Length: 174
Image (cartoon, rainbow, N blue to C red; front, side, top):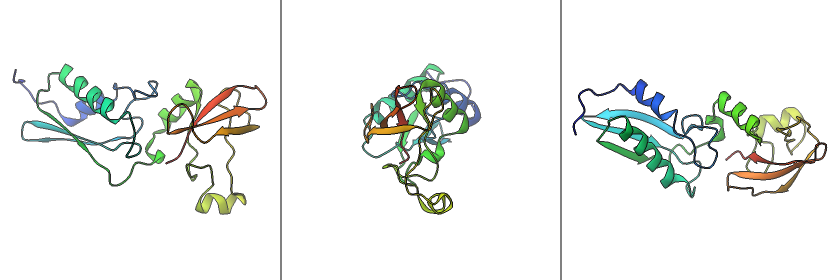
């Protein structure tokens, strides 16, 4: 079935903002910053997606969810392209999404840190330390400890709050 009008890309971006990340459903694929570009090439909608890392197991599900969402809005011709460069960075997670993560019980990524928890460059120089402190998303305490570099998904690490005694995930910078 051919659609009568071609929606503008702004409208498509709004639709994509309703597509949840399959591993963290409280944020969308646009909140996460993995949808890089949306444009029309003739009568085909092209959506460029950058996975959080090249081996992300959720990539195929994300692409399918994007395609299904767009088809539900009447778009028949869709091409989803994987864009690996530039590589995704947690800096692309928007401010609203960071707050959604915190409210959901996941500590959002700390800018200027590496996946292993080291502070990088200017952040390390300004703070005078090499390791970061992750605040508990439940009580806000910084009296926390890393339990494991790997959490419930590869993009998260496991932490525990020493004050409220609750375990939590930290969304690692990649």
